[in-house]
Image (tube, rainbow, N blue to C red; front, side, top):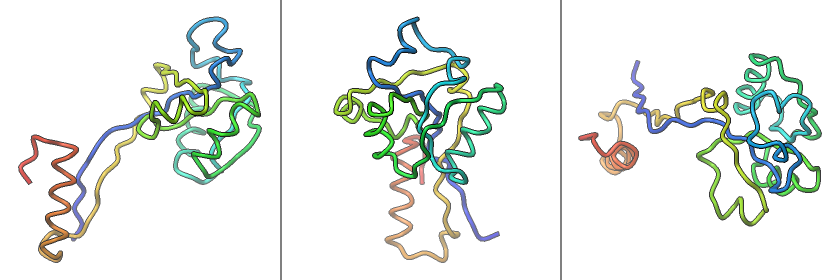
Length: 149
């Protein structure tokens, strides 16, 4: 009670690899290719790691986890050095970021099914200042233009 939840957007994981990663030699990767793959993942207990571990369990995958880190940027910088892949949220990735690190992102059907919704959660608007209410309405309209506020 007293809280409001505004869904903003859905997101899913994508496989991120160094551009010349060996798994690409046989064509577009499939979910089974993650089994045994050297990977750098988020640290245990983080939201994305929980999502990733659930995915591995669901498809009976045992990747070769080389490192666990809490930083998107550090993971991206280390992929080439470790000759590893990672699973990152699609919403985080930018073409320039991938290009700067000589990386590619690969969508795998089963990863697209690992959706999560990012929402704006706030107190009921009656208890908020007019500036905060305006900010909430603007954010909601940005992600859902059909919304009337």
